[in-house]
Image: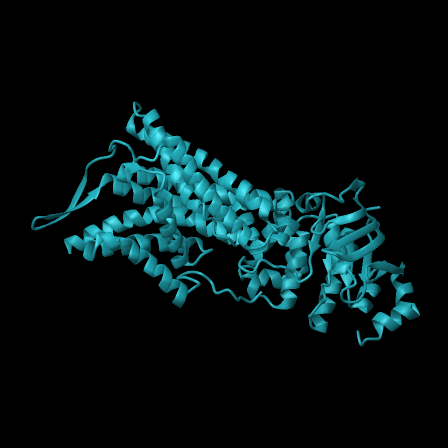
Length: 301
Length: 238
């Protein structure tokens, strides 16, 4: 029981990070009908900016430093997200369907190598900054730990997800975003600047991925240029599991993938934990391609 | 002159859909554009809105040239469109669809404009919280027109508002267009296959045949014209 609880705590933390990245996949898919294969690298850049910023702000009080790092990483990573859309997607709009997909994969490889060249191929460590936590439960020699950092990650994620949902559902920009998802020509006919809205979607997705990057830097204390590949694929799996295009689906999918991975690692084998996540991807694609909260392709219009 | 279209050619790939169209709409008028399926009626509306681009020719709205402008900029100048197929946002509520329409309007007058749309189409008020995709065809058409009106346009473009609707609903829609024009002096460019209804409503009309204007005149003149009668009115339209 105690062991299970510990795995659930770990899974929820991991799932929060996947969920934040998955939002970017699902939003971009929603608006341009395409998977942004460079999104994992955007997240990796968020983590690298966090490492650089943490070093720069290391003599500031911890809370201030974290706030500044979050801000810094979100802004810079968002600029990368914006650039990816401008360079890899916009010139190919109206081209054949596979073209932007291929250019996004190219962008992904480019960004990996770019970071490798600039920052080196070796791991970048950051010293642990938030230590300690609660002992939730004691069972024999096994203690269930809930660290302050885990609380911070989950709470930050939930706040961001709630804020983001509110933004999409109730603000004018959010409505414009949804309008573009449903019918870009009609949105333009009502005065929506479609190009700007697509850019905004990339920027917001990148901003959330940056937060995930900051969290993962704090959580694992180490980043490398290859970090985005696996995390990106897992978050993509999460978005598919939740229903690609669905915002609550991405959040739910992220948390589920985190939990599945933690439980698998805890009860079977941590070496094979990736198998669990990707088996889910295969199963979902075969048996429920629209995902848990997605809508089927055909609808009455 | 509110809208002037001069010598406009529009292409879809290699196909020339408009072959030099001249047309104008004066302030306060209802102008009907009639023609068979595939004549280029919708293409003309989309070219005016900047969704399709004119390769040659010139479009002027309220004194400014808009030929090469982006759609959202043209809309911001006061052109509103209820397009072919209505294009209601299916996963937004009726109210959200109307809010989208109000994007370019003065937010201070939102409540007033909403009340006016609900007064024109009381059905929309009953359906306010329902999703656009669940409405009937007639309700979707009302919503498409209401959404266009929410932007406080000076020129209203309507593409086949009667298409696929029951005769009683068609009557309601045309009555609503008449009221919008009479009460607010709204300028309307109406594209229709239902020539009888459209020409009775319109002050003036144009006939478009495979990308070219072949005839123009007052609604009454066109209604009585033997060629128009033979081609567009005796196909059973009541």
